[in-house]
Each structure stands twice: as C-alpha cells, then as structure tokens.
Image (cartoon, rainbow, N blue to C red):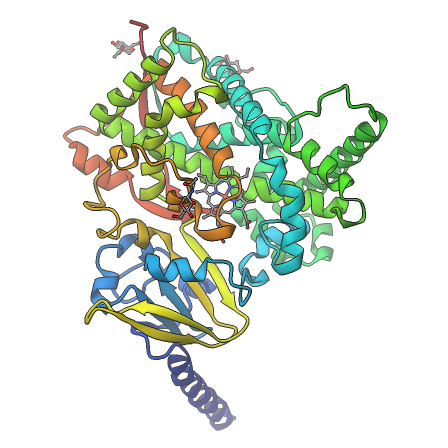
Length: 519
Ligand code: HEM
Ligand SMILES: *[C@@H]1O[C@H](CO)[C@@H](O)[C@H](O)[C@H]1NC(C)=O
Ligand SMILES: *[C@@H]1O[C@H](CO)[C@@H](O)[C@H](O)[C@H]1NC(C)=O
Ligand SMILES: *[C@@H]1O[C@H](CO)[C@@H](O)[C@H](O)[C@H]1NC(C)=O
C-alpha cells in the first residue's frame, strides 16, 4: 500500500520536474522566478511577498530591485506546479505587445470575473471586438463628458450635505478610498444609466438597495464566491451565498428592465426634436438599434455597461484617493493646484467640461498619482501563435529576439514601467510638473498603451477634474500623523500599493480635511 503511494508520488515528481524544465525552455531560458506555485494560484497568492516567495505583491515591493537583480526588464516566472508566464516592465516590449497584433489576445481565462454578464468591448477580440467597439466608441463623446462633469459636481454637493461636512468644519476621514469608491459608484450610476439614488450618510453605511447590490458585485471576494459556487448551493441557508446570489439577481433584473424601457422609450420618440440623453446606456442602445442586425443584443449591452463599472469604479476611486493623499503629504503641490483652480474659476464657481483644459494643473496631480499607483497595474495578453519580440539587451546594448510560443501568457508590469528611471527620473518623487504641458492622451500610460488603451480615459479624467477641483477649492487636506511620526514615516506606513479587490492602489488612507475659508 505505502509503496504504491510512494511510487505514484515519485512518478508525479519526475513528470513535474520534466515539465518544469520544458517550461524553462518554453520561456527561452529568460532569467526570473522559479517557485513552487504560480503567484495567481490559491497557495501562491495566500503567502505574502517575502524573501523566498514573490507572492502577489512583488511588482510593488520589489519595484526597485527585481529587474536590476535579473539584469533585464523582461523576465520569466516558472512555477514547479502551474503555467509559466513572461513578465515585462520594458516600455519597448510593452509597445510591441499592445500594438494590436491579432496574434495576441485578451484571453477569457484572464478576464473571468468580467464574463458573467456577456461579452463586451473590454473582453472581446478580433471581429467581435470590432463590432462592440463600433457601437460603444461613439458613446464616449463630449456630450457625455458634459454630463459627467455636471453629475460629478452635483453628486459632490450631495456628498458634502449628506456627510454634514460644512457643520463639522474640520474632521478626519479614516478611509479616504472608501468615500471615493462610494462617490465614483454614484457618478457611474448616474452617467451610465441615468439612475440616481440619494447620498446616505456614513452612519447608515449600507446604502440604498441598488448601491448595495452594485457594491456586492463589484467586490472581488463576492465575485469569486459567485463563480465558485454551483447553482444548487444557493438553496442552502448560508447567509453570505444568499446575499451574493440575491445581488446578482436584483442587478440582472434591474439592468434588463433598464434596457427594455430604454428601447421602448427610443422607439416611441421617433421624431428628432427631442435631444438624445447623454448617459452611456441611451447612447449604447440607440447606436446599437441604428446598426440593425449588426447591433448588440441585450446581454451584450448589459455586458458593456458592466464593463464600464468594473473597469471604471475602483480604478478612478483609488487614483483620486491616492492623488488627494499625496497632495495632503505635499502641501506645496496642493497650494499650486489650489492657485490654478482660483485662476481658472476666480469666483469660486463649479467647474464644467468647458473648464477641462484650464484645469490641467489639477489633472497633473491626478496623472502623477496614476503613475505612482496605476489602477490597472497588470495588463495581460496571450499568444495564439508564435510571436517574435525585440527585447532590449540591457547589458550589452542593442536588442535580442525572443521567440514566444503559442498559448503563452505575457504580463506587462505597469508599476515597473512607471518606476523606470529612464522614463521618469527620480520615480519615488511625487512631481505633478512632469505632466505640465503633456496633452497627448497616449502619453498617460497608466491608462494602457496602443489601440486597446482605456476607452474611459477621458471619462475618468473629467470625473477627476470636477471632483478634485471642488474638493481642493473647499477643503485643505492634511495628514493625521501619529504622535512622534514624521511625514516620511507616514508615507512609508500608509502609501503602499497593493491589490485589494480588482484594482491596484493604496488602502486605508486617513486624511484630515479643514474647510478653506474663501479669501
Ligand atoms: C483612473 C482610472 C482608470 C484607469 C487607471 C484605467 C486603466 C485601464 C487600462 C490599463 C486599460 C487597458 C487594459 C488592457 O489593455 O488590457 C483599460 C481599458 C478599458 N477601460 Fe479603463 N481605466 C480607468 C477608468 C475607466 C473608466 C472610468 C471607464 C468607463 C467609464 C473605463 C473603461 C475601460 C474600457 C471599456 C476598457 C477596454 C478598452 C478596449 O479594450 O478597447 N476605464 N483601462
Ligand atoms: C445620518 O443619518 C442618521 C439617520 O438618518 C442621523 O441620525 C444622523 O444625524 C445623520 N448624520 C449626519 C452627519 O447627517
Ligand atoms: C478643528 O475643530 C476643533 C473642534 O471643533 C477646534 O478645536 C480646532 O481648532 C479646529 N481646527 C482647525 C484647524 O480649524
Ligand atoms: C500622440 O502621440 C502619438 C504617438 O506618439 C501620435 O501617433 C499621435 O499622432 C499624437 N496625437 C496628437 C493629437 O498629437
């Protein structure tokens, strides 16, 4: 009995060892990690990043040392158990990967949480992608951006009122990113499907049912529960499962009803006298109807609206939160931004989309936060065919060719790119002026690169411009230091990037807000 167990184990080990060496060959002997488990496996992710184990967070913790250690910005990650992958933080390699070559795809297995609702512009490839893009692209127009600015400002005033900030005058927010998550969800809801709910103050933390359902679904843990649970299990009396299932049902039903009533509304107003509403759902449904047979079906419309929520919620909230925390830390930069706001809006009026270009210095603060804490920290592509990359040879100069076989996953480490001192000198320094006068959107690499870079880039920037302008105009942000703590120590303690949920960013950021008396 024991001998046969040992025999099976021995055969397994031999087979696995052979596979391991084949995998090292598959990545062309690129230097890099050799570990027991893949970093994305249950075991690999559960063990925190430490000297022996890269864990999930090595792209942050080791951002200054890892590529130097291996002598190249393009490395491999070969686990003993699991699939090998290639990682790169070379902008040259990233550009080749993200240039839109049809042999590189967004693999369904890398996008699992997004596929629950139907294909979308975020997940599709090739011809399907073109179909989605044709319908969805025009929805992101200046009409929509005007609405985004307007709704952001309104929602800001509702937040200030709902939280009773003016009466309090000065106070500490324990978790800035939580407030920003709640804020962005409201903006997305209003501008995606014209759905408004009241700002419930933080003592009634659970929010309205719609907000609650959305929050549940946008939380990674719950998504995993939803995916991993067979349907019969929802009949069991387990509170957590019930809640997740309930949220999916409610939201699904609500989304379907939104689409149905939108279609009815659009078909009943045939004359063109009434201007089209500017929310994304209206634009999507009408563009889709105009395409006739080539349009999107209901599940694809819903899939796309959800992709905006998934792609836009945590990313935007975390970047705004990081920007405000960095401005609290760097009061001189904050004063520069406030000065720019007073120049652009001398009467203290609310910003509109027309003020977008005038507030570029406020946006520079956001860009720099996006560089340091990129919400989309990992961008992945899979090869469907052999693909040849030109990889810079950091040691000898020039470049080498790297032949990548089919079905290989390549991961672009955006943190690594954004801390590359060749591209961003003195990368640890929060320096918004790096972005002064940078107007070409393709330079904002934290939104990705190439033809599939972020579709919601301008959308996110309009939210950031409007919200940060209102906040910085009315409030002074400072950091609540612990007794005896220096600013440097606060930064070291608080401003650490990591994944929590779907997005990368800073977590548990406490800030102090004090009302600015108008001069
Ligand atoms: C600061 C906020 C944001 C960041 C950092 C960000 C980042 C990114 C990145 C890096 C990609 C490229 C992914 C890839 O190439 O695989 C992407 C794609 C995308 N993002 Fe964003 N995003 C943000 C906000 C938004 C918002 C607000 C929306 C929608 C309202 C949005 C919608 C999308 C969509 C639809 C795509 C897919 C585009 C395509 O494949 O053609 N994003 N985003
Ligand atoms: C929040 O709402 C609760 C219940 O409605 C209310 O008692 C409380 O005073 C509100 N707090 C603020 C700050 O408005
Ligand atoms: C903040 O409020 C407290 C009590 O309400 C007050 O003692 C303090 O002076 C205020 N601080 C500032 C900077 O306004
Ligand atoms: C932005 O930069 C890209 C790449 O460098 C270039 O192809 C494009 O024409 C530029 N766009 C504008 C509006 O200048």
